[in-house]
Length: 110
Image 1: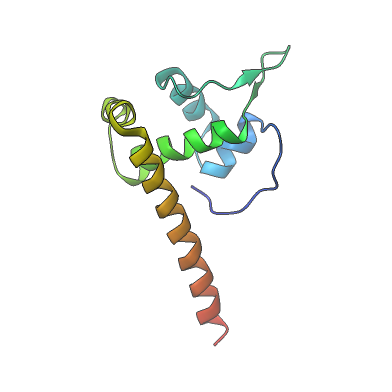
Image 2: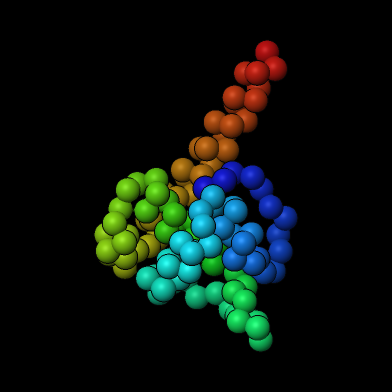
């Protein structure tokens, strides 16, 4: 997932979300179909509107599938069995990546 911080918005478009996670919009739609925890709202035109909570759920899904190499079925089982533990792990990994990036920037300026 891209570590660029975004301003807190109420809703994000599927294009914005795909860019944040560096995946295609079709992958986001596929994950929405496969994972029950991912249910973005839709406007009258049918456009998906992702909330910050949806982004947190996507972060967990992304972590399991892309960073840990789980299959779709494996990720579903992991989420079902122990969502809290998975969320905490994803948060720790994201925070460590931010810290690493900061340290690399400091190292460049030395």
